[in-house]
Image 1 (cartoon, rainbow, N blue to C red):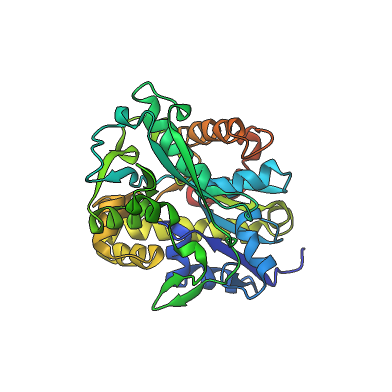
Image 2: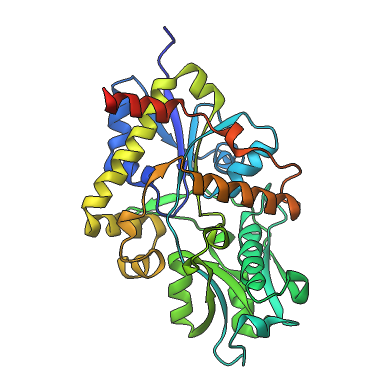
Length: 346
């Protein structure tokens, strides 16, 4: 019998995830306590090396639920991780311009200036990758390519993990430069003609600054067009956790799925939790993720999500965010999911 795991490190992105709700409710902590395991937050750690594991998955005995780009990058780099679940909660993905720009359609972006983040200090610049993905998918609907626009880079001097995340009134906040959006500032100053923003902050900023939405990619009927960093989101763990402490990994997945099942029955409370997770309000959560946001939380390993993730991996390789592509199916470890299904069947 293996030695009980002392500490599980967890991390999730500030977006709707079952893991986020499971942590906020205390269910993950309670579930693992009976196994003799405590939980610690990666993003709230004082050690910058630990915090960076949110992006490079370098910490042993850790779980990550959030945007797929860092998880894909870490796997492509050779990190020994496995995928145990995929969740798909569609969100606003906006191509925005100023109301006085004279631009009213995606077609009119040809020859125009598009602002992109450029985080040279980051191991993987997921913000640039997701903006390019949104732009490329929007343009292809009108027969355009990214090369038809002028790309303007906005350099961020800080890294993603420079400052620890602090929890204030239930919301995770950071005081680093990453909290500022330089592309948005550039758009408001007239330096660029359009930008990409996503999530609750995107719909709020579009409203507050009177911006024109040329397209909400997140509302398109084709899942491959909607596929981006957050669609689907990955639930990944390191190989050692599965090989040495499979019951812990299975309980993590069980806590995530129990949180999602609870969310389906508690829409108002779920919106409050999601507002805390996104550091936004319940109103903007509903605008960004839908009135049925509570029903969109579902972690599984379904074919649509697997196909979309494979397509997204090909995009990341084509744009040289990762060196080599890999087979999603070979990344998946179904033992935790199968273990839950067996327990339910019994």
